[in-house]
Length: 131
Image (cartoon, rainbow, N blue to C red; front, side, top):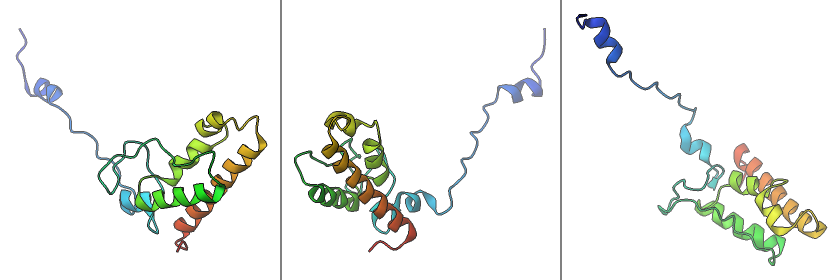
């Protein structure tokens, strides 16, 4: 019979989890810029305590300007992130599929205008020039 020695005890002891590297500036700095929520995905917490939903707060019947205003208001409140909205509106994304953008040039232009608007405010926020 083999006696259990220090080597066996060391092998059976749980190993600590590796430490995660921190991003420079912390997660809050990466998520928010100039008071705008840049990053986030459904399920992440919002300032109100409710998790982010899958809504991107646009309606096909609304004008581009109305949709831009609604999205910007939700981004400022932290209820929507710029990155998530852009991912939903990408080519082949769920909004383009649901709105039938492949067959309708006006719908494509509407979504493209929303994407352009979101990219511009994202760039301004990251540069620190968004007011």
